[in-house]
Image (cartoon, rainbow, N blue to C red; front, side, top):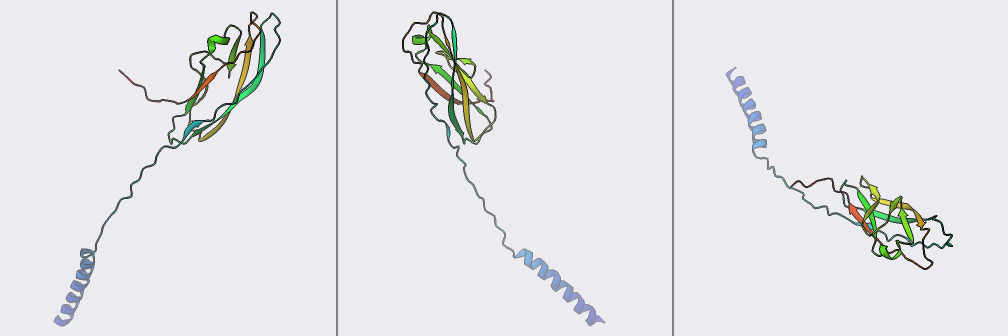
Length: 161
């Protein structure tokens, strides 16, 4: 009987030792994968040019032109959205004769937002309606509005001073 218990005891100790021994001799290691995701393109395709021609009538006139079209690419990887602004560097040269409205916004020598997008969209084609308001005091001649387009990110964070 003693021999039987001794064998059982040795067997139990062996199983315990082997199970502990496997864990005790296991080699565990770890590694890390790090990377950097860099912001991509944020760009606007140069909008199309437009032309118009009209005869003076001595009265105010409003002309609807073809829309101005452009494409926006936003691969910045931020959910900030963006806006398109426009201004005319030579506004004073034609302002006495006509006013230009793009997407309902009057163009001047100061930047005006003509399109706003609040969420990130990777690629967006935009079409902006254009109207020209001819003054009743307009002088005959050729005039050109030089437009400066600016694509800007929407800034959600405000700076507190």
